[in-house]
Length: 414
Image (cartoon, rainbow, N blue to C red; front, side, top):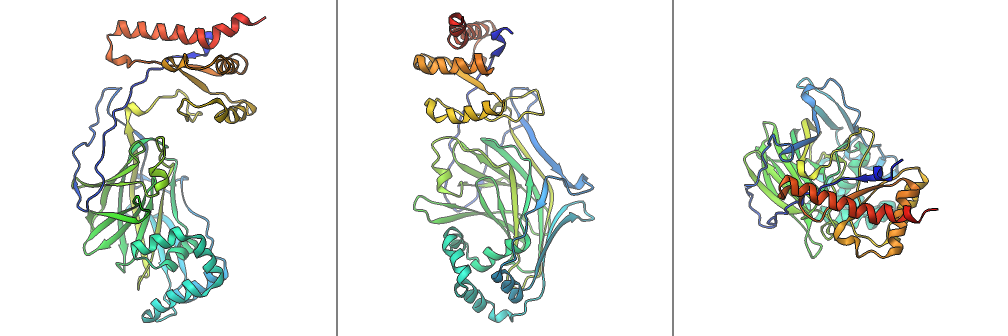
């Protein structure tokens, strides 16, 4: 086989990062809504789309998490507050419905605050869990949510997961839902991506609150109305792994911008990547007996410039940006080789001269001996040049990388 077959051509189109305003309590119009274009190098691509109004059954990527409510304090909670049940199915309006039901409480409503306090502090096993879950305690304090319910109800009902979304450094989720509940204290928590969002009925509106930690580790939130409670609410979540923010955009054009929830993700020294799932958790509080979350559609889109097409539906691509010192990547490379897998080494033309010969010999060995592919990371933005000059840059880069990554080792082979 000609060793040049290992060499792949790659043009880098740098992305322009826009700074986003963070702060303030008032929603404001978003002006930079991207437009879908026909140009193959621009516009928006759909990465995931499920329209439940056109479905006949629950898709395989949708499920309720395994229930965990089998401990003594779980049973005590159910005995006092009533049994909780959840299910997912399609209703007549062709929406995916996440339905939670609660039996009548055995404790009078007037005594529920007392029961909350007793259960939160009086059960030894549960107290141990509270110490381990100080994060949940801080969040409940900030959101004015009874901790006992926040800890217990997900164990009784299980969260709803929608999976097979595509991890991205920058993307938009379009969500269409409505809520039906009989107590305004009830709410839905929505987690994705890097976010902790609360959906709640306030008067005749559905209010979305986006929580985040500030630089002092205090938990704050921004709020926005995403629609009338009597109608479907259509909204977007724009994940930005560069600036570590989520933008919530309502149908009326107003939006809020908040950092990712955890400061660990806010402070990452590299770009963040979105989750491969969305999680909904319903909480029935106060005198409530039910909460129905109706999901009509969910989609995920991204700008074309962030996506490199792969000509096989059997492959999932991921990348490790660099440069990195070799001892930070060797273990992963050995693992790939042990599983008879291989990757692509992207040789950066400007950085190649900075590598010592020992590192280059190691990389050449992966190409020659282990059939790793070679990619060319060009030093210039090709689409900013006339076609003839762009081809010249590509040819020169190809020859240079081939000489450094393949030819030298072949010349020394017996």
